[in-house]
Figure 1 (cartoon, rainbow, N blue to C red):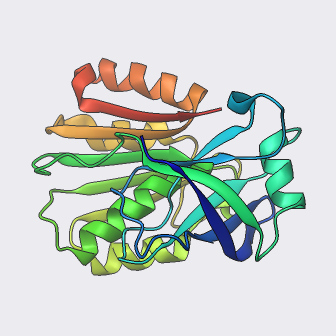
Figure 2: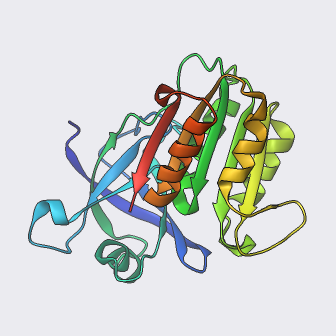
Length: 238
């Protein structure tokens, strides 16, 4: 188990109306090594009991040899952890954190198509994975990032993902809006998007990250498409 360390918040930016990006440096380390898809746990001063103070967030940046990581966090109404992070934490603040943790990481070798299916800030681990693959020229088959939000203004890293889809062979970005119809975007929920692509039933892995309801439904639908449980990997929040 990794020890608890002190992180210092270097930068905070407002990304959408209810999400912020936090860049956190771990000064005691020269470099913070992790695998794309892993997370860190923050110990926030919001409760007397330890386990009620802990909040885990996927790392949205990719391993770059530095000691700074990025987290993207959505403000949850009534959420003690995110209320603290949004109201009390400023640039220069210190946070207690532990990591990296988790096994939600890329298969090796990447010898099947890859479906990265997410809602909201669930895009964080997939952003890390895709940038890492591009930087390291990782051999891969087709990659489909299916990202569901309510409206266009809720999309995170959309410009970045569109750029990657132009420059990275085999990478396909599918922004999917449930409450808005826009050219260049799917309308509805993520499930219809991957189901239409999977009609051919090619070998695939499915990585799911987001709210429990989306993940539960996706697992059922992927099973109904004929894929076995070992093809599905998930990271749950909420």
